[in-house]
Image (cartoon, rainbow, N blue to C red; front, side):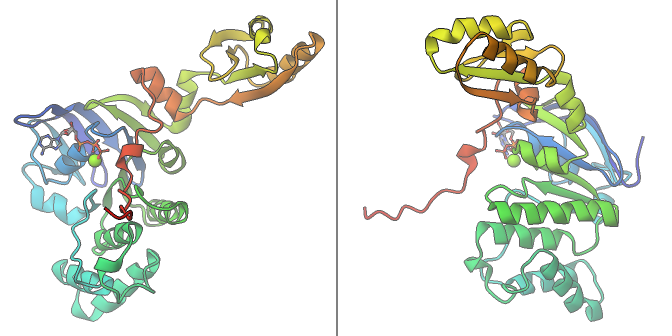
Length: 329
Ligand SMILES: Nc1ncnc2c1ncn2[C@@H]1O[C@H](COP(=O)(O)OP(=O)(O)OP(=O)(O)O)[C@@H](O)[C@H]1O
Ligand SMILES: [Mg+2]
């Protein structure tokens, strides 16, 4: 099945010579106009998958079509149909943002008369109009990511690959980028394949999410489906007096099965959050003083935990941009 505006991958594998099986049999379908979120921790195989789908790296096994073209046999056609903002943006520190766009519009064969306007529109769209004539050397990490996105959009691609587009961005730039990606999919019908280590990003932005771990897709679906799969909300109760923990657990047990708690005791609710009022009444009628009571809705992190036995939260920490060492040596 080759979809003209989508992505179809079947049994994709990439082995590195002295390395791991970085991608270990990936099957996926991305529908036209869909935002597909590829969520996974460091080293999961996200970039390697993107590199294969964008024809930068041949697969060891398996096949895929992008925009209806085979990634191995029809590389030039694939490349003409896609735009990509990769994890390591290849920008020239000595050129300005505007100069980068001038170069890219020329390379992409945009008619001379349209180049300047096309560049201006894209710079505006990613919020770089003010900085357009500054050299990239002086751009922040977030500004570079935004310029890279603008460059990927020069030839109005039907399919866009974004490899961790918001890593290192401040919350404001992050939501601006989410908005722009959402707009591209919704208004322009662009198909988006986006990798991320951020649960929230996959949750907010993606129509469907594939969770990748050790080169394999361990779960796939809409964020709502995935969360519903791992189940019902949990309630955690922290008694004022730690001695009361056992008694609290006894009361909670009437409402569901015990589960792991951070501080106090917790249950996974049998029926749903409607039990909350009942729980409060039950604790109160038994005179149990409560310091904290929390309802916890299942998150994509719970999905990740359920599928892999590990938590994804915090996995991005080591990936943060290094801080400059300002202390004197
Ligand atoms: N060129 C290479 N040679 C050898 N091993 C590689 C190469 N590129 C990637 N790998 C290995 O393949 C695995 C997957 O790497 P990949 O870059 O695809 O992960 P990722 O999900 O993109 O991680 P991150 O979130 O850190 O970007 C890792 O174990 C990595 O060390
Ligand atoms: Mg990567």
